[in-house]
Image (cartoon, rainbow, N blue to C red; front, side, top):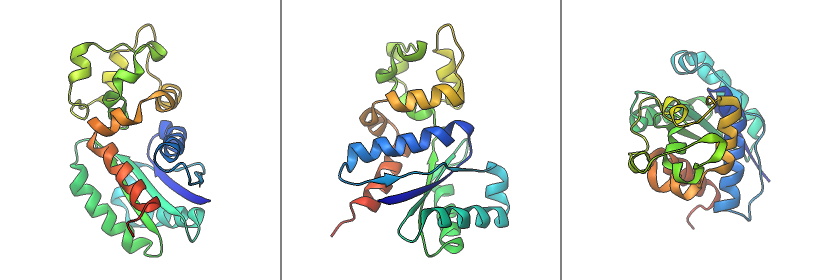
Length: 198
């Protein structure tokens, strides 16, 4: 069994990311068994700007992962370029924990962008309704992905700690893969770790 130790910034991701990774395991590598303990939640700005915070949390994640484990850092890109920031953070992570495999995933722009990518599969779920125009939008374009989802929920408001895990459990992973570059990054990192080329 492989332990995947995660670092996240949002309350919703504490529940949603382990659920998502277990779904990816069943989808892409059903022969593997993964253990995803409760993620370490960080304050994004402090984590990115204070080197001692960055190192401390990565070392904690390394201890949780164990010698053969994997560390996944998932943050919202917000207005940053995911590729540029991701490369810089990957270099810092290698310096902080050179003895562990670390993947930096920056959801472009937020975790909820992946729901926009898989919106067709979420129709009617928890009051979510998207029009044909909504389904054709470039999934990672809306600046406020949470707000985009919230506006399309009928008779209730989007709650990060309740709806995010529910949508994560329901979303079509192939749709998200096809429409969201940052989700493809997560899946390619998964494949590289669990299905390395021989």
